[in-house]
Amino acid sequence: MLTDTLAARPAGDPRRRARRRQRRLAALFVLPALLLLGALVVYPVVFSFVRSFFDAGGDRFVGAANYTAIVEDPANLRAIRNSALWVVVAPTLLTGLGLVLAVLTEKVRWATAFKLVLFLPMAVSFLAAGIIFRLAYEQDPDRGVLNAVAVGVHDVFADATSYPTARPRQGLGVTGAEGGPYRTERTVRPGATVVLGFVGVAPGALPAAARPATAPAPPGPGALAGVVYLDFTPGGTGRPGEVDAGERGLPGLTVEAVRDGAVAATATTGPDGSFRFGSLPDGGYTLRLPASDFAAPYQGVNWLGPALVTPAVIGAYLWVWTGFSMVLIGAGLAAIPRDVLEAARMDGASEGQIFRRITVPLLAPVLTVVFVTLVINVMKVFDLVYIIAPGPVQEEANVLATRMWLVSFGGGNDQGLGSALSMVLLLLVVPAMVFNIRRFRRSSS
Image 1 (cartoon, one colour):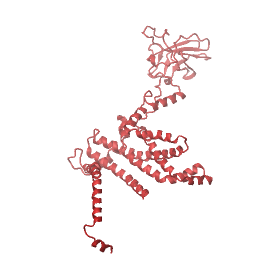
Image 2 (cartoon, rainbow, N blue to C red):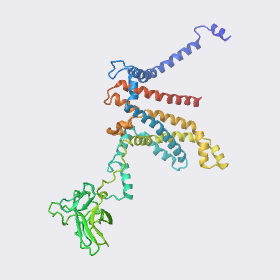
Image 3 (tube, helix red, strand yellow):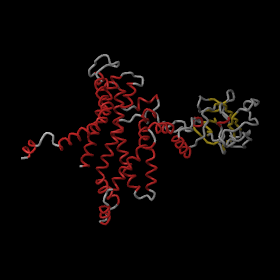
Image 4 (cartoon, rainbow, N blue to C red):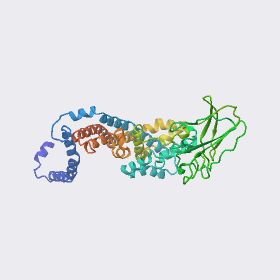
């Protein structure tokens, strides 16, 4: 009957014409979006796919040679390895941090302000974030804040006094290889005094505790005294090997009294560079300043070295995206029925049990969406890697996106291989995108 009714309906039925007009109007509104989608997404993908089968100049068809080169070049394999590390580490840490922070902020009085502070890095561009962390990771403690903290903590627990550029003045009875240890050429006996003059220390490099040096007084029987000082007078008027007015001591140095190859006693120079050994058995001693006195001071961690550059860049990425993860998971946490949590507490469940067996399972859909979204995002990370990693270790930090750009436009000028890398990157991203879209559709249905 319905077929007969439709057949009997005249071709000029107003409702049919209205539906056709609606479809044409819908197509008219969608057309600009389709044109932009085709120009900005479909055409570049198709062009890159075709271009990946040609050589660097695009003149000669090479088939799958570019894809073969991806697995044969160690630099490309390193980029793939780093991308895999990013996919495993960054989304996992961000999802875990976001979950922990979202749960903790519920118990903080100023939760809104706390969330705002953590979310602020999202307002910073990756370019600015990269510059910030490039400076923070600087090896020089005077410029890099992380190494400034590391050096400060290290110096609290270790003696920071050292004179890496110091060397004994030649011809005054002190010998040794550059950088120490240095020792007296002649043996000395208790009751004697020793003057050890050093040069090569800039006046500005002396510790603030350094005081004017004084010639040692006779120490008496069984003792041995001396002074270690900067044997240099401003203006060059001093006498080598003698303690002159205006010359400063070198405090904090370790001096060892060595007899028969063994250390018999140890002393540390005071603010004026003086030292003293007491109650030494009679005999001949060699005074030695160990190499640790002349070692270079601790300079912190080489954050941007080959071993740590990728974890360092991931750390910058965590700083930017932790707020995003926390806010999304916090929204899911706010939707959990409170009566379920209260019922669990009434039944005697601890907060840890509630978190593991109720909160996390109920948040599983949100956690999955956050994790997959971050996986898609880290597969495309480019800015932070390119800006933070210095040139000498750039290859150690490369991911697929940076490797693709460097091969195509950053000096490689091989757009065939770059297009092949872009196709590999697309193939890796598409499954995560499809999974996310399906989850959105299921959640909205």
